[in-house]
Length: 251
Image 1 (cartoon, rainbow, N blue to C red):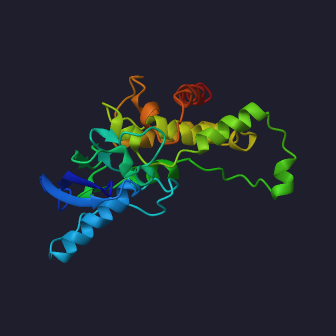
Image 2 (image 1 turned 180 degrees about the horizontal axis):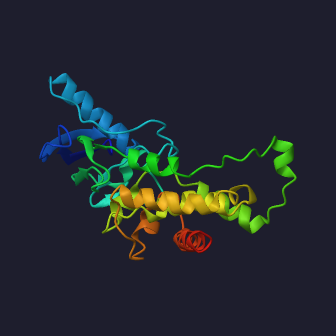
Image 3 (image 1 turned 135 degrees about the horizontal axis):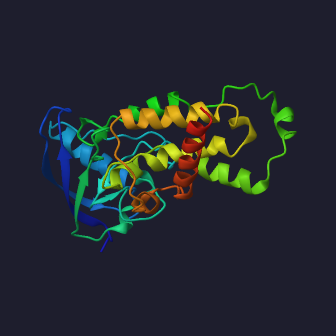
């Protein structure tokens, strides 16, 4: 016995945002447990191309859990059954021989389907453009090191900055809320003195853009934190709310 697996895949196929789309069944054989989920999809696409069929479109880039592009909803969970990993870090040993695996794109009005499993997440880019940056001149590295920052604040800022913008928080939220993503991007700067200069405009503008994009409201269910591959904390949402309220008080 080789230990390799034969699987049934139920994959969402959709030509574009206007197409109704449907689930299509595929069989893949002799899949190594050591393959990543995306490598398994590479095998499937090679089979489709060899038969003259159209390959399945899906997002990927770094395949190292850094870029956040590999957004697949696998058996009802963003990025699949493992905690703290992206789809590209999910290995086939998480499944069993003979399993049926359902693969869908993120489901959110603010993330329209481009094709098959690929969605348009440019809404996140527009939110960042509204204030997810620091425009003050902080000088060179030596100057930056002269700014005293308490270690707990620095650690919390680094933890928030770990967000890769994959959208799993939106995909798993019953309201398709982007609060965890936006709060992480606000927190990573709100915790640092360099970020305080634009704190008022940042909180107001980023939240306003989030609402304009059509993301839902947060009901503190906590699914976003559970499914986040980088473990972004719900504490960031509380911090964002404080930043938002403070911004309106100081208007």
